[in-house]
Length: 333
Image (cartoon, rainbow, N blue to C red):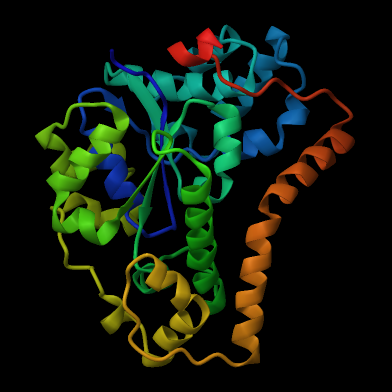
């Protein structure tokens, strides 16, 4: 029996999430859009939209979605989206999922989902909205991620923030691996995927309960369709899958930068199978950073509960029901 569970691709920024998105989009049954970036803001502002059992509230939410900055990247007609969301089941997950489903309809495909690196640190939110979602996390050597982040036009000025990006993502990955069953969460290393695409794509297809399609190993053929041209930092997606960037941090980071990365998150690198280049140097500042990362990892669930309370107090409105009712399993519950 074919499944219609939604699919979400996650990972640290610059870890290969766009490449994996294209690989999945090449499958004849799966459509994953460019990053639209309305899902998390909609969730955290959900109390502003009120009770979605009111069609007017669903329409207001749809109008907000179609007015967001990256909506046009989906290639959908705003009026069509507004009409579909207004008639969707009265939950926030249904409203958001309807947009992704319309994107999949563009390509006549039954399975839909989304890709965004920041979902990795918000997996409880994704599963609140889409209880039967399947998560695919792509893991990459943190030094390569930091080196790549350093070259993006949207990078923060502080190098420590780049280190923090990967450390937070690594902690979220470890937490997810502990928390979710094998039919919900699947992890693949970037280095393994680019070295042997077919083997690891077949494993992903088994996880998704889909047949492997050879087109998945040729993601560059889909890049002109699924990656907006203005995202120049994704230019490599228009080339064939290659191992060229594996361990490129050795040329792209200074010795001091590499040592700083390993001092902060070296223990996490080894847990994911990466080798350290130097003995870790851990002064008081590094030890403090590592301690804070551990504490923050444990505070994640409490942060979500606090945001729920703040949202209710700020809006003084009843929040919408959350779980989507779009897939066969969700409708059966």
